[in-house]
Image (cartoon, rainbow, N blue to C red):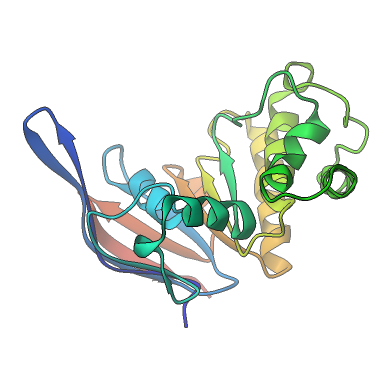
Length: 227
């Protein structure tokens, strides 16, 4: 059974009086432990696909199953619980809380999951040390470099021990050196058995994945696995 499975998924948005279909009848299965890059030009539907896989958006048509469960039937509360407990997210713009320390930012998913403060801080500190920020626990985002902020975001994505990590253009706001560091972290996570789904327009980033899915005009145009 795939970890993630889309069957016949379409997604439409209303623009004024017009219904615009962003995804068209997409079938996609992701097995546990895969490292998948979803590629495509602007407007190809890749971010919409990630939002559906990440239970941020619901499909207009078709079925999405996570570990065999029909996600499209979940209530809003159940979707929030799924995201908080079994998914981790890394975004291009980091999405850190500016007035919170690195430690508190990394611990946020555990707050939503209802863990006590001591446990939240212990696990967040452990993850920040893992990404090389053990000496930056009390720093706010403005006191960190772009690469360090993305590492805080990665620690936050990992802190709830998710079944899958979703990343949307994770190196898009980083210089080349910091981008390589982030990709190296993703490689390490993949070697340890994590499932990663990364949306990117970068051929360089996609070349690091073991499977590349290319979208064109809301449809899967290519799905290639590497040895």
